[in-house]
Length: 89
Image (tube, rainbow, N blue to C red; front, side, top):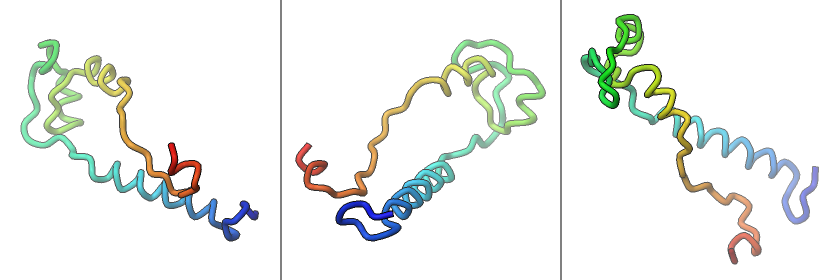
């Protein structure tokens, strides 16, 4: 598929590069390590034994972790198009 001045396949290359960047970002995230807490670091409720065994180094109870995961995170995107219009914004 031709995309103006772009060569054939350029759009797919951009998509694949974005996916590869996201996978590298996710793999670089630190994983919990060390001894798990018995009580949540945020609400001080007990953390279940099953959760502490399943996730080594866990610091939050399930409810607090769900709330933290639901929060949106701001991160900058990468402009791979490099068009004149996108550079002027």
